[in-house]
Image 1: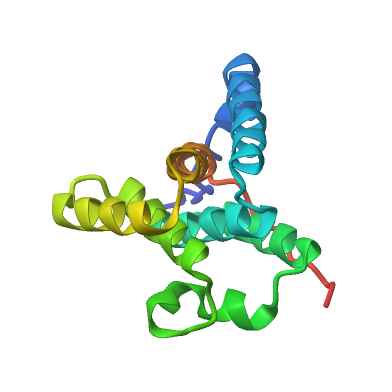
Image 2: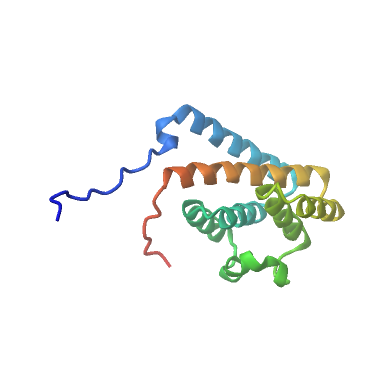
Length: 162
């Protein structure tokens, strides 16, 4: 037997802390996008639904935690949050939310041209050009934050709130 001790693998670099200017620029983009969504008529709950759905698709635990809490604070129901990953199979989401969620999924998986085309064509039936643009920008921005947190392995601390 070896006398070597096994040490934990090195913690990943928190790239938001390592490159704060770049992260701050991303935060500024996010603030601009949130204002753009509001100006386009996408409410905060729709924005949070996009943030959560994209984070589900990318597997970003940190962003899922943060945006689920934000959605609840904004008045979102636990039932809708619990069924969000199956939003197509329920009538709990409005036509605007459904169109925005489809665009968010297509933005997160842009290689699927058929889904992208279908989502865009369906969105044109429900959303204005400004809303389409804003929904895509929200998805683009949360995708970027997801990558920051996933690659940094940002921890999700246990919470004891209800």
